[in-house]
Image (cartoon, rainbow, N blue to C red):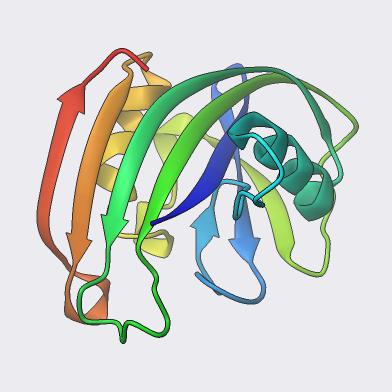
Length: 156
């Protein structure tokens, strides 16, 4: 299972989401992140992806979740299954900017656009934004519906 990162910049009662402009998840709002390369740590991958996708250098962060995502209906040659390492970013250098891959936008936490995000986000994102650390598993069916999920409070 490939390892991926996902981070959410937070400032006060706002969270930075970005609309994916190409590739996996195109057209959806999400955090910033991507694949962990064979020669890097999960934390280094998260920092690299933030610089590539929105042009910021992460300086202070906290790991808040590890989530397994399963896509059993996707052909095995596409292999969408992944283990996501989720971070909340409290400090960074630079201003988030649009790139070829992502268009960032700040949202009040109470106004997170869940209907424009992956269907699993509504189950866990609010929990980690309130300070809970979790492990979870989500299995996706047709049309990105969730066919099964488990969420546990955890020490990450």
